[in-house]
Length: 436
Ligand SMILES: Cc1cc2nc3c(=O)[nH]c(=O)nc-3n(C[C@H](O)[C@H](O)[C@H](O)COP(=O)(O)OP(=O)(O)OC[C@H]3O[C@@H](n4cnc5c(N)ncnc54)[C@H](O)[C@@H]3O)c2cc1C
Image (cartoon, rainbow, N blue to C red; front, side, top):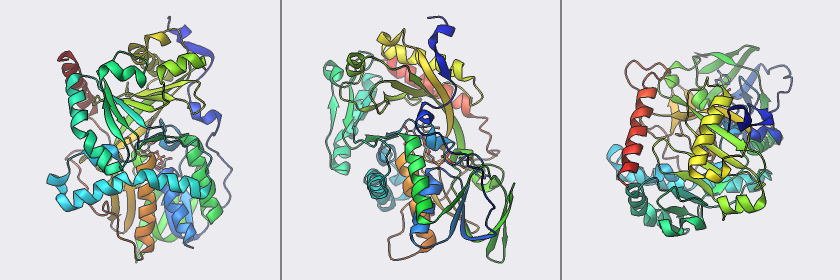
């Protein structure tokens, strides 16, 4: 296929999700002069925090530099992994066995948490417990996945099992992989509908939301905050930062602790039913086992393939990132060679130097961020927990609260080391694959 013919005539360099739920850019009214809490960032973290605060009677104002929900929260793949990535990392050396165990159990609880939240608030976002299939990129990866599968079943209380290569076509219409791991405790949703629903729920509860309002400076005077924005200032008792991969110069301490990494997605044109049934027979959400992974699924209406991965830097032209993702997709599914792309887009995910999400306070400023690309459930949970930390009360404090939050020398928020690191990870994936 020539470069031009890869793209449908109505191709758009913006998220497919926005067709159903484009982040709203209301012309904002006057900012309040004061609020109990100001939340910076209008994605899952900020909105979940605001929703909980407002439900408890706290006055809360959410400010986002773009439209509410405009960034990662309306651009992601909508795979809800329920904290599994974190739950399987061995953190006991780092944190001690007891804290690590609490963290793991909390991470696993993020899937039922978000499911309850969506149900309670009546958010129409195509949430479905699909289960997740992780495709083994090599035999070594298969063995590594197999070593963890019983632990996943035990932690989630739901089936998790290995699917050997000769049976993998039950889960994916491809022979590209070496079998894989099936985890029932996972889900898919429509991310832009979810963030829109969260915003509506927060507003219903009494939160005030302002898009197009960048926070430029945070100042603390005698225990109170002055939040300066491009549109005026707000005085408040507490400030909460939910800016994740978009953390900027207004919070330099946090910016030095979060590494933004661009991730990319495409959507294909609608496909025949028989083809989508062959590609993803059981409608699972999928990812592969590489360090620099691909993640993919059918759209909630089951008609398109959505394919994501890390193929460049944020500034890349959406047609070029689309071409690269299409090529990756066709290595797995050669039957999609002539299928065109209708949408191609990007967004930033937030890594931390210890690969753990962080929740806490720095000089009186609350924060919740850094979910290593798996934040649909986790960031919703951390936003809620940040609210609980502010309100206080009888609940047990989240195990994520106040972990040491590392950075590295010479890092100011611009990840100069990223190209080298990604190249090293890709090389290791390649070597694993060559070995079998
Ligand atoms: C392409 C992509 C695919 C992904 N796929 C998945 C997936 O399948 N499953 C999964 O679990 N996770 C996925 N993620 C991660 C997930 O989307 C994020 O973890 C989650 O959306 C983070 O929510 P958030 O509210 O913390 O951040 P965001 O939604 O990014 O919101 C942060 C907001 O802060 C605002 N902001 C920054 N600075 C300021 C300022 N000074 N003043 C005012 N506002 C400011 C920004 O404008 C931004 O809107 C993906 C992410 C991307 C980008």
